[in-house]
Length: 446
Image (cartoon, rainbow, N blue to C red; front, side):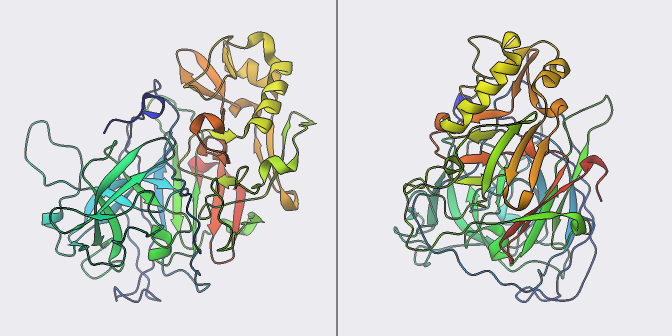
């Protein structure tokens, strides 16, 4: 199915280089032995005439978040990606491995890949996974415990298809639909090194040709199933020079740069907290306020906290391009932007239906008028967006403040997207229920 026009996105390959990975020699118990692997992948530039991506899923049903082990992660690898509006990594899936491109999404649970039997044709078909070529591939039958209509891990009930296989349909907040069969498959790094079989979606009718690497707190996320207790990424800036594309990094396990990180706590929700607007599996944080220039905006802290309905929840999300704010916060940001740069505003223009803070003219000049933007958290931790990166180039000579109204998504949350995570290490320390930030030149990160 085609994506709605508002969120139609051109998926692009990114450079991915795995440089270290710690796995045991047994598939079912990944413990101490260490090996190093590297996998190069090339990149293409993204078309500028597209709308902001938003791939994270919001599951309204409340459920208990599974306990996560505090032991050291069995993985420790570094990979690299070139920046796009999405963070795209490539994983070697199956036996023998087939390279699959997947969107790194900290806001969704189910990981899925595109599955089709490859039919030779000219030009060659896009990269999809061919189950018939993998000896470790297996399907989930209808009698599997996950194939029950009241399983809360899916936005729509699972069901039996005509072949007696477990069928899933998964809706994302932007209306994107992925559906197919639930399967088990390994991530295979060599003939002797792999993850245990993981439950994945094998999509055959998705609105995009790339998969999703779900990294939220749900029991079926890649992080939970593979027992990953810590992961991090560093997103380079979007500045592209001829012949050069900035390259960032993605780690599973320990990050050698973490000594200088500043940490904030993840907010957790109990099993009894059933709120219609709450995503209990998101990486939820305590956003405290927003500054523009030297001015602290008059936004009540309550705007950044889940109310009795769950509205106002604040989360870190790699699967969203822009940052989205609830109306009370968005209106205050817009009010200040208009005060500082109102005469330069592109009047009557709303970018993709979500942002009406857009400008014609020189982006650097307008950025200097607006000044730095700062997201404030508890413990004095801040994300600082320098004035030169306040505006996003949306094509046609138009630049917009990289913030949209969450109401226009049909969401009621504050979502810090990857546009505001540039030149920043973001580490998810799941075992210790915290998120760390560290300033970096991500195109030179190691």
